[in-house]
Length: 330
Image (cartoon, rainbow, N blue to C red):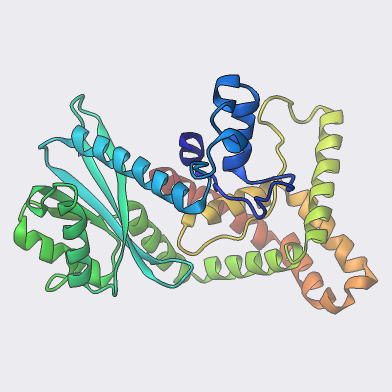
């Protein structure tokens, strides 16, 4: 159980019946342990009492809860009576319920900054008052008080940083020293996106990148074409001695679709475009000559023209240089 929790792996399998070839991580690990230890084998699975197998979902959840309690207890003991900061964010889960995640940040006895996840609580809504009550209740359940908070870290949503009724204002009313700091990486992200969207050249370039991803990444078959072209290109350059071999070099690449809330994902996409430029060009030309893709010929031929253009190449290298600096900062 400790191993599965530490690795963040699922406990249960799709089919845990005795005739299943894979009964899930928990039972398979237990079987492995029993097979390699006669002492353990005496007390688990088939040799365990029928009412004490400790493999049912209900029992597993109770044991997990015990582990969570012990983990939080260790965090609170390490914190002691020292002040701390909180990091919080809300999000909806797969069942569309609003959840609030809370982390503690503090300096331990050796002077090292520590950041530990404390828990997730369900909130009926995301108003600042509801979030404050949820945080206060979670802290109180572990013997902590809002008055000991010395820092707050949230995103820039109005219910979080509002000057009149925002969460940071409500907490500062009880703990005036609980200074609010906007997430620096998120703040930097917002600035970069806002500036990029006001620059016509950047807008044009990322429109072309989006079209390229739609063409090359539309199916697994085209991903396979790109991987094969990349492999052939690496083989040729290795034979010519143009690149070196070694651990971690010449890894398989793809074209990940960038995420608007993570500027670093744009940087990675641009890096891969530069590294795979000959391979991408080869795939585009191949698709443009294949009659099976006649329906996409207009977009493909337009993309080939843009991909070969001086403007696209210059923009790729220029934008590669610019976000490299904030990528390291964030």
